[in-house]
Length: 298
Image 1 (cartoon, rainbow, N blue to C red):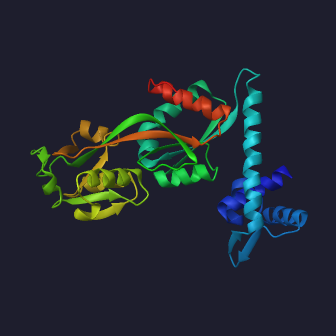
Image 2: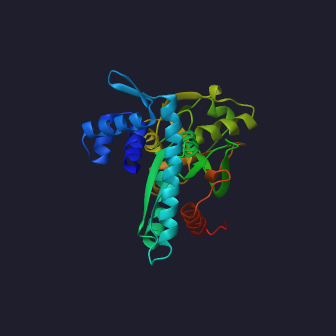
Image 3: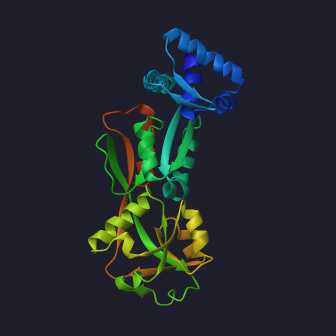
């Protein structure tokens, strides 16, 4: 039954029998057989099939919730029991927003793995909204996000301060000017992240404090990653508000330059997030290491 539930969980996550079979290293007919046996056991359909597409039935959605809870218990058992031996073991699923996963958390993960070599980590990357959704769906145990949003089902613990700075390529005509007025900002071509991004959320909030809206600016393009924005900046006269962490290397190499905007500051906190009222030993261990790395108390 455990393996059948694992098959069911994988199919439910991928909504694709072929991808589930490849992930589980079994054949597609074997996947179909396990799902069929589960459906016979519970005497109800778990998936609706429409040609090549599948979707969870209400019964399937209910079983998925129970399956996630069962696997959470197994994961906690494995880690807690491993504390009786010399090496702690377990699997920790973390989600981090794009900027954090690329520029902030890698050294923390490296240090953690060096100390806890038997603990496996799966890192999910997405914008802040996607990470919060993954946490609520129990696809991850810990998330690290930036932004202003607050969901009552999520516990937010601030641990790092970040600043968004306006940057352009080093040969831009504004690079020597260093400072511009907030009115001048309206005439410049800008790049932004996509909707759901914590970066865009902070920009909108900061502009609102100055009586401005995002629609007051000339947005040339929305791009889905920090790296794509940086590359675009190096080949255009556009500007973009970006995390100071994300452009540290380019500033050091004098590829990008910071332009200050009078009266406009974008500061934000980076949060470690977990489900409200839910904690486990492995997640707590990682969070202690995370806060210790940045010399903070938890």
